[in-house]
Amino acid sequence: MSTRRATPASLLRRDFAVRAAPAYASNPSVVAVVLGGSAAKGHADRFSDLELFAVWARPPTDAERRSAIEIAGGDLVRLYAAEEDETGVVWSDAWKIGRCGDVPFTGVEVDMHHFLAEDVER
Image (tube, rainbow, N blue to C red):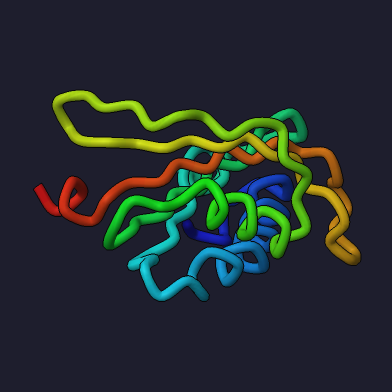
């Protein structure tokens, strides 16, 4: 994302993503954490959610997903069961930005999607 043209809302979401990513990346089974959606494109507004993607070497457990949300300072809304289609398996979580120090947009929804590295590499 180019910071030259990004909206202030995109920059705030990007900054939070940078803070939240280590909650996932600290798990040795996580290969990558990626920012997506309007924040990644630089055109998020004050109503935008935050989309994050984690790429795993193996399927994540519910406990790992919950733990990362807690470490990131989020408030869990829902963990969704794995869904499979022709591109592979995806696990999704919905959570809200909660107690995270000086973050000025508490309550923004985070849509977290988990993919297997083998599916992403195809």
